[in-house]
Image 1 (tube, rainbow, N blue to C red):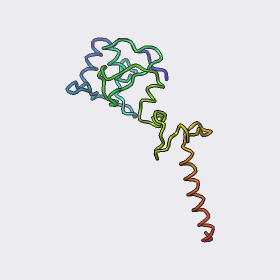
Image 2: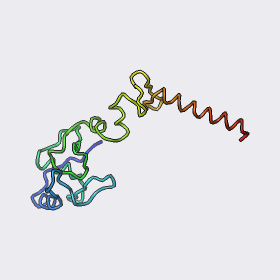
Image 3: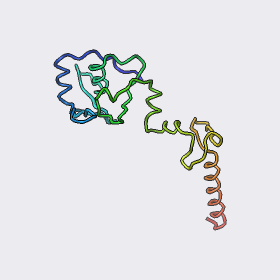
Image 4: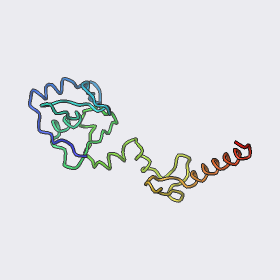
Length: 151
């Protein structure tokens, strides 16, 4: 993902920015506008920027090219630069709680070892072959029972 290159905001814009931040807790909470994904946004010269990126840039300096910021606190509205770490997009996704988080474990949701029982489907998803077989057996049994009942 390509991010807008951020220039240092003017003193006026920085004052406007910090007026929307509550620093009374460990997380510095953004109280301004948000986008549909729950990230804070701030407008400078009719361009919207994500507030955690602005905060990091103002207090820490430029974000290295090709890196994204990971919220270590998992709070998307936090702008505390101590809670932000510049990492690759892949690392950020793997650290998250979305579907990619399953790549961090070698045990399926039913406790089977994915090192020995895991397979990669054609669409790239990792599955447990024991669970797939079990689900297949249940579906086949239900199908046979429907055939016997004449449904």
